[in-house]
Image (tube, rainbow, N blue to C red; front, side):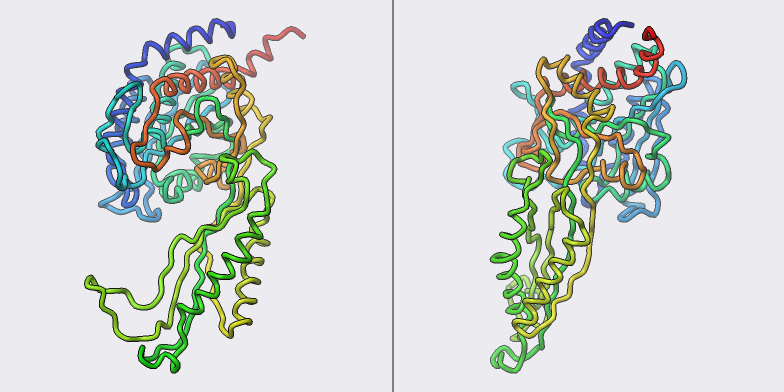
Length: 433
């Protein structure tokens, strides 16, 4: 089938499923698959599996047994569906997570009501990323109906992306289900809008800084050593020396938003002294322990080992200045991850954006990490990007929504890009010498 004809056929197939796309998105939003604790994962997985099985996919529910946070009460359930084509060829994979963060306060609508109003579907996970999951399913269904392509199409819905992916994409990659040789091209429908092609993400390092003192009676603080005051010196050095220094480092890659092109450190949690009672009472003690958890974001040009050494040196300098030692502990680390912007999947999606939307795609890099890291760094699948409906700045916000038109446009782009990736070899074989 000629490219213009397949574009028309895909447009017609997606348009015929517009109401299905809307209702599938709403059905997924209505399942409160909140993480933590990891509620209702199986309910989401079954919606995905049942829908794809009806379209001829072999759909499996896979529990990540033994994964971090997996339990009988909150099992980490993933779904992996595959449909073989008309002959040998590449595998195009659509990967989405269906866990969502807690809704929080400030909503004007029911976070799990999936209200449809003025062309928008509202609810927690609407853009991050149940809308993208629904759009990828509809794209896969459209391709299954058209047929005639070689290779295989896979669709996955995974758990725990919001907490690192340990019971989802990471677990599947470690068991060879996400791996080079199984998948060739991966599209992750994270919300970068219908014209945004995301080729990778910054790195992240979570760590804990602890200071220690000596307990004493609060009426005689001169007999103790206050760990909180020592942490205050650490905070002062972070604010006046370290954060300004790293903010001067600017990524060459097109990280969005613009301010996220700079290396950064966020102080995520701070604790010192005894836990307060509900009434606010404390024993009159000088605190002998304080703890700070930080979230350090690395631009692609930074080396994780050098970043760690730099912060360790700062803590040593502050400690020497004020006569104490600070403990630094690693909690979590992800290296920056980047696909080739001229690789097959990035070029195919950019071309599909141009043909479907009539404008050039924006090539961007994500400020935060997502499951591309597991396909790349564990599974070795390098031709992996993010592309999907929704606005990044609405993720995790009250009154999160996704535009219906964006859902449909993204589904058309994903289907067209997948068709071209699947048939690229056949097109070359058919070309005159």
